[in-house]
Length: 339
Length: 276
Image (tube, each protein chain N blue to C red):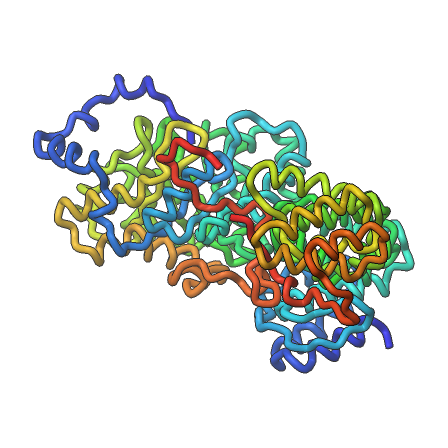
């Protein structure tokens, strides 16, 4: 979350790539879908409220069958409790429904994000309504929480939410800071351990080459965000999987209101395939590990989505599917005529 | 028998022993405890489908509900029976409405006929009619007597029109013919004209609403139905002419050779007719 195109110039080494990579890139430029035929994906970090129906359509076409939407910062600070409450309610309500219209199972994590933890008066009120939302169906964790500026207030609410997660037996999705990432990541893990959370219940997000080893060595899940300019590129991701193998590693797009790519996960899978990583490893880092990590909440049934999103009985009436309200019938995007 | 006792008997036929134990343990709670149990239901109760079809009130049916939805409605019925403190009850119910996820919202609207202080929930119910979430709309519109009892004519007409607009089958609305009215039929005719202008159609069964309120201008709509080739529209036009005693129908009956019939049935048209 947070894109900064200017950073591209400050840190060019990651984006130059080898000759071979340039060839691969131009190959895939003309369509990555043939490389991932039959694969299914679980993207554990997507802010769909910020995305369009075109994205949902493209995700469904690319084989994304389930996703997790963490609660986050909306790009500007909220000024009252009601806007937090409505946002949380939309994650378990409208957005969940919208996703179902495209055959994609939508889960979410609920939490007070690090930026807004700095508004303490409001943060106190948000903490009061969190338990109610964390108990709801399909809420698979506390998230995304952690550090941004690494202030005392951020630490206070990070700790309080770790306690909530422990009490409710929920996994935690930890956002690691853009600035001073390495120290922030170590600090996030140390505090989680201090609060007695099992490392396998904590997903450390937005890792890179510098943080990965320590996260895995300590037994945490390591999530990698493929996000243009500010986070990981997928060529680097391939190298990480080659180096560390698939255990406890998961890839996500963190697609949001910034310049991001909702198809980052299937594209990365295609690149892994082209670069010779075996399909079972690809399956683990783009599907299974995310599923295993968040299924520890008891709120995910793979059977709900693995064979396509089966229309829930509650969505049917007298055998008729009555999804009409808000349903988006498939449209041909290339057609000039709009009916 | 209390409403809650009736619902409990239905649950008892369907629930596992472990599920019943959890329900029994929660059902003695106060308002706050009951609303927490309402939220936690899916963690302890399965989604098996209710086959029971008897009902405690006309128009209210559990048919095809999931068990966790029925158990949620059971907890709400217990809350209604503990609603002596009106302010506390309404406060707790508003909290449930304001924070509801999709399945909770469905349970809340399904339970409207058993909520205490019935008039209090009309604005919530019309919000559900405005909802674009299919299951939420269905929960208030179908198998639910609340709108027929509590909605104003304006709210009722919005319910029916929204149902038609979303291509959902209107025969599932309880009280459809009892609450039918001339302004609704006029709006329906305007709506059909818009659809026809766009090269679209309306589900044939909606014309059943016009039978008791035919006018000269509506007769031209019926003429339009009969003059086109869609067999469903032709059946609808025929049924309207047979049901109506409006004097102007005679000429159309002769034009299309329609004979009076003692028995008319809309059943063949009682389906969902998506326009896409």
